[in-house]
Image 1 (cartoon, rainbow, N blue to C red):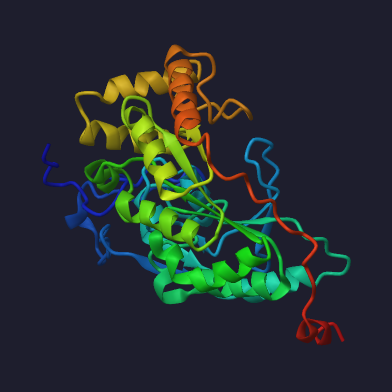
Image 2 (cartoon, rainbow, N blue to C red):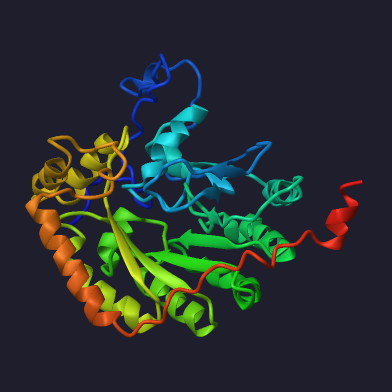
Length: 357
């Protein structure tokens, strides 16, 4: 299928919906009537310096499986159409649509803020997830190296860290990850939603190709770094059909396990995803959307913990769960056990001690 002429290539979202916190809205119905030049190029990306004073966030959601997280960036150029984090961009005056993937806030002081966090009086180590919101290895990381410098701090303090990403750029930091792995201080999760390059390009336009992500799984595993795969999110009638093949590929690449979660279209994402799926897959758009609604009592999203990332007792989800379990039991029956984090190695380095005085 060919994309329509006005389709914004290289972007997931094709709209820039109104920010729910704004009273006014900028529209382009009659752009020739504007009395000043307005630069609007949805294909370009702009970066802003974020002067945050803290970097580590407490995770209070009981169904996430993490206690603490940190994000070197706000917004994400990967442009994944389904990304639950899109709504957070509205808190900063941006849209959850194209703005989320084209207006990126970077935190260059993140490594030093993390160091200060570790040096707090009576601090006790708990694993911190990179990243809980947007991808710490999105394209700008290649230049900024904020994530790499953050990993140096984790290594300096011998502190456990978990990483989740859709980008094979994680391999750039293989040297640091190896050192962390020697002390049982790191786990890496690669998010792989599809093995179909065309679907990946439409759905996650600036992420690494599926083959590159599988190669990253393989190289991380070969280097002795615990690596798992998240089939997240699963979209009914779009990505679920690939599950057995995807799980087999992940096992063969050396992942120690694989998990899944179901798409959740919270807030503005419901409209953004609906627009995208109707433009990209018009013949089965309603089938996809109706399956999602069935899982959430007729709505595109359910905010209740324990229900928001599952399909409940709906027929589609019960079939999918069985399909997933059968494939996982088949291909991961001989997988290596999970390596537990080491919390005993944490120590403030000598130069850190001097900063206390």
